[in-house]
Image 1 (tube, rainbow, N blue to C red):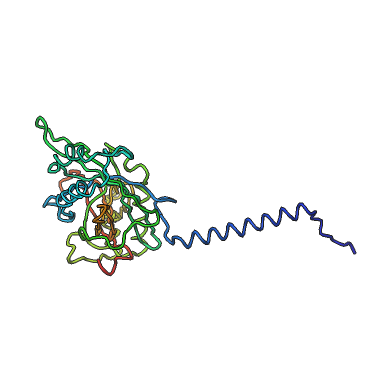
Image 2: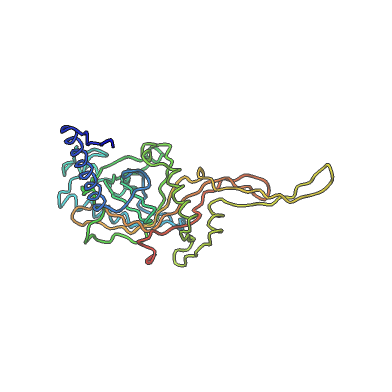
Length: 328
């Protein structure tokens, strides 16, 4: 009988042992990293940076959107900056900071003209757990005023938020406003770099898939009396519909009813709206956002009864994240 021997020479045995050790260490590292954070980000493999402008005051006619007493916040921010020497930078600068005298001259003197904040945020969306976090990295004050008959906007100052990458919220923060509701456009013709890190179509598809998988969708018109939609109604609001037309056959003179189906078109979704509770650190004036709900914003062409085509922009439905379903 032919004997089979182990033909691995000593240096090959050492190589195999090293490979086995590396595999064990790699597995341990994966297990350790998994323990650090159980949250996936479905927007991208890492957090996504998004930048957008937010109005301090919401016009009365915006029935869904809700502000946060922005003017009062700006007054307190400027007061804290002067009396507590908060570090405030030139617009979008990482290193060039105002002196207190410069701040008084260039920011405090025009505080009544400050109308918007530009937020720079890191977003993480996990559709498996259906949880979303936002970390405010900085916010920039925007001044709006009239010059020679034209309305002009200019950047005034930037406040950077120092934070640990594994924490988006500070315990003990002071409530700023509940149920702040606003829209973030995912198309920005004037500043395309603000949203270049996020895929508009991917985000829209993630929300659509969540609805189609059975996630409960709600109306948004009346926040105090939310209406739960059936899956069929949710699909219809997202753009899926079937219309029936009567077709006439000229050859034999017969008529037949034909179903014309329209599928959900991801290209129609151009923005998202959020419902959030906002908090702030009174010592640093850092803002924290607790994301409660999200709504896709759909823009599409609708045929009117007279045959005209009208462009329509609507929020078809609202979804609440898993950690806020009980307290919506």
